[in-house]
Length: 160
Image (cartoon, rainbow, N blue to C red; front, side, top):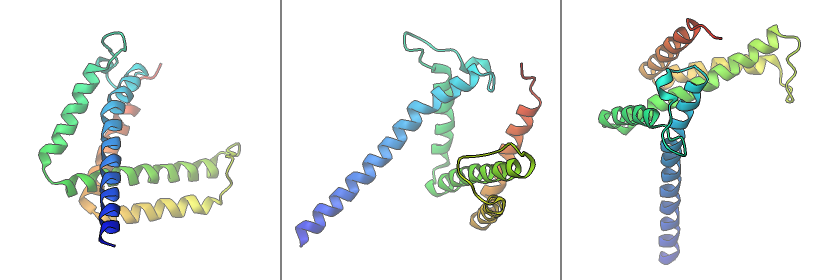
């Protein structure tokens, strides 16, 4: 029985390490390329659109991603970082629910493949916002302020 518990605990530990490394590598490799693509679409500054070498490696975007990651590391407390990241994910779900509600409410030609009542989107948005406030008010305020600043900056841009 002891050997079985040891084997299972080692298997779980290996799974946790594998998932952690997979997520870290996905963020390290994917983040700069997403920033580069956003710059090519003129959403973020053009300096991040420039690639180097045969594979068009986004060095400038990689440097900015490094700076952001380093700032997170310098905070030093993983719980603070986790709460802030969780708020941004929950805010994404909040805005998906708000978008779905507004599309169903105002656009008669909105016909998604999945049919849900309009109240589900509204209740989901309200519940997500209340949960964000309940979990951590300060992290919620930081996430909302950052997203409002980003929205304000994007709304003032001239789109061609």
